[in-house]
Length: 250
Ligand SMILES: NC(=O)c1ccc[n+]([C@@H]2O[C@H](COP(=O)([O-])OP(=O)(O)OC[C@H]3O[C@@H](n4cnc5c(N)ncnc54)[C@H](O)[C@@H]3O)[C@@H](O)[C@H]2O)c1
Image (cartoon, rainbow, N blue to C red; front, side, top):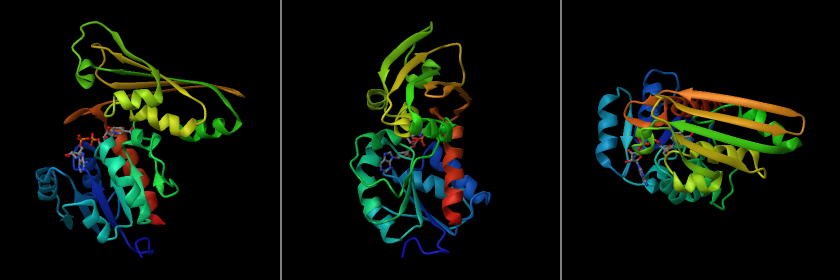
């Protein structure tokens, strides 16, 4: 059985910025795992990651091969398209799954009971989920990033998007998983999103304002961008590491 107690094998889909931080946390024994099985459709990324690690890493050439090795937990750290393609088959195999590309979950019609959504580049989801039970009136997310992280070249501050989370996650599949994570947390309430391209900021900043039945919340996260992928914040990788740690303990 894949979820047998004692199985500490981890599957990783995507060996980019997040996958690399996660693998390093395993190497540093922050996460206790017996074996890491990695898949990346760019085989050179998987090989590069394997070559930097000093613990057992198996490279596979497909998600089917990964499933056949029965990891206890799989971490998706690839892309929204990867999540759309692979989540249904991983769910059918009954394996616990951590999804980073949360935008994909908004349109997938699958049983999400074994799908775990990490807090990603934000936090405080426990408070938002609690408030959602009582009733949320308004959630507004303002994400402010350096133009480099949004692939724009504006010299002055500029609002590049205003709308709702579902559309934001579709239009900015690599940048707006935060909006999708919020939408999944507060549903059926809607999340209004504003994306600001701001040359004066170095950090990826997310501000979340909530008005709910019994009060208000204001949450603010200012995250250093990952050096190799400025769209991604280190906090996102560490949130997957924290979740993986707890799933492997069960
Ligand atoms: N939930 C959050 O708050 C949050 C925060 C940051 C990033 N993310 C998302 O997490 C994912 C990973 O981020 P990253 O910064 O590590 O990205 P990255 O681009 O640095 O790495 C992604 C890796 O996945 C591989 N890949 C892409 N599509 C694939 C597929 N279909 N099959 C197999 N491998 C595939 C790529 O070759 C690459 O090596 C992205 O979708 C990103 O948008 C989520």
